[in-house]
Length: 217
Picture 1: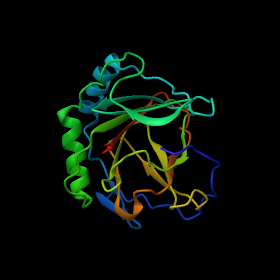
Picture 2 (picture 1 turned 90 degrees about the vertical axis):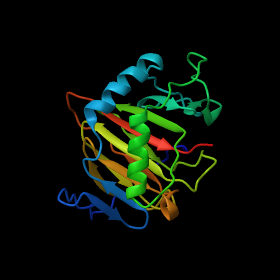
Picture 3 (picture 1 turned 120 degrees about the horizontal axis):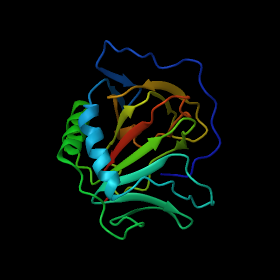
């Protein structure tokens, strides 16, 4: 994940939210699969995982603190500190391996990637992000992975949010896509290094959770 920078201009033409169409394709390589994830089942696993590897607000190289709280599961976990961004096989807080990725997580990642046309996706890392009201994710591209030939699968749970989708340059204009509990985004191929982010969560009484599956090694 690259360092978030200044927010590019927003485009006025928004992605249309067509809930009647279960699979939407936007441009070359971004797919939205509506209401694919079973929220209740996934949340039980998130609770279990974060008991072993609690949510934390990571420090970024510039010294600031990420607004989004995060944890990981799988063989590798994404971490950040003043030294930079990287994947680690152990949780820096405990020195222990990250919790095992649940079978239900893997099954969802496999099926969503295949439905978007990316077969044989084998994630070895799952980032678990928790957004409170006012928390967002700056515009960035995911480029810390050794295998950029495999897609990203992103699962939304809990509160709704607005996903930002740009281009292959940080300064490219951003378009907005509303995502709701159970929605799954998949991007890869020519779109694998597209810049993207999440607008700050609107005031609400619940968290937004996000699962991001990647092939890191």
